[in-house]
Image (cartoon, rainbow, N blue to C red; front, side, top):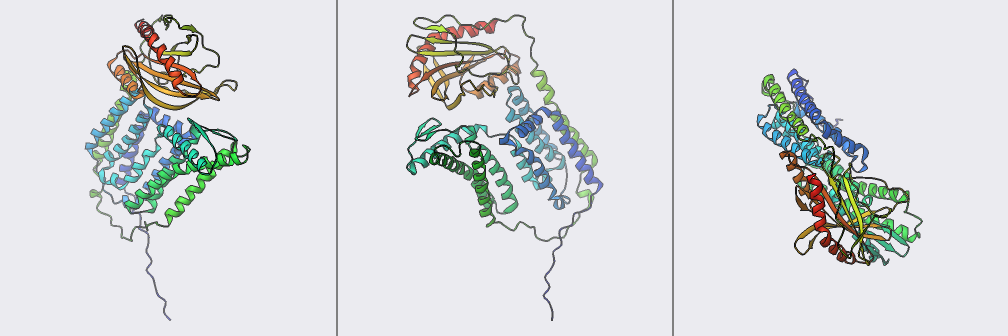
Length: 522
């Protein structure tokens, strides 16, 4: 009796390491170490967010995953030619210049993307294009390490609130939506940042992209799975919010209102993710490479001469190292004047009367120690608050747009910024564009108009403020800046507060201009 014999495929052997390969690895390691060392503040800022922000904790795993992805290709990479690409010095210099501009303008996320792209450019520079093409996915996946996504929180909150309201109405539960506050007969719910689902979305995209790369060879299937990983958590988060509100409503607000709220959310997300990967596995491709015999080309065809490797490494390090010192000297703070004029405004015209803010009034938080001026103005019927914040010099963590995260005392109102939009205010001789925000604490609702003054220009665009600040820094001009805000309370519709706010702005705008001009001159 004879037995059928099936061929046994041996794994592709990994070629033994050679001295020239060690030299190429050492040059790449030296270049990347120099790049990270010279841009340490940017790398440390990324790591700080990974460690302290639950939303971006996935960044701790991205770099190790990229290293593992390269390591698992080591058999094929051993036969990959490595010839430096000197032309990459130009993209590396352009990325360094963009990093410099982002540093001057204090745009951390742009700095971090530039640093990651400089890592990619350095790999291409030292190891060559063919080697970089072979590890294209790990290099691209490294971009997910940048803590980015907070800009999507407002639209995600709006979608979650709208989805929840629609689902509740579909099952016959009455609900009233006031911005992001949902009122049911059993109680009220607030859709806040933690409800946006950004954590689920980022985690799903990071895992889904990796899974698609490892499980599919077809580009179409990879793109389809990544698209599902992008859309599914958004819809699932809306369903999660609806189910939590439904459980709370049916239990008369005894379930899903405390820590179990978060537990249910993560359990639901885990279930949805497991289902997504299970379904995706049914169409998994055979990603095992066909058996092949490893052929080791001659050494001289694989790795460039030592002089070329070392020259590319040193040139890359030199190009990357130029920008941090240049940014340091550009951002040096000028000497402070011994005495500075104090920010103040002229008395208001009749019928307005100025008074001090109350202890529980909402104040715009700012970093550093800017000059502040604020007052409540009353015409006998309406009350509008005016707040001015002015910086003599702006620097990192001490500028108009620096975010401030403070936990308010338990006895103070817990204000939440809800809807945000842009609005144009037409005055007698001028048009002012403002950011219109709804701020709420419990049943108290405020309408807020705010805009910025930078380099002598009024704008409601944070991006333009950053660009104007960068231009002032580069030209050595004054980098002072101010934020002007009007605040008024309303009951039902924001239009109730908009009318007296526009009247006060029209009456006080000349005084605002004079007050800011006076403090800037002195």
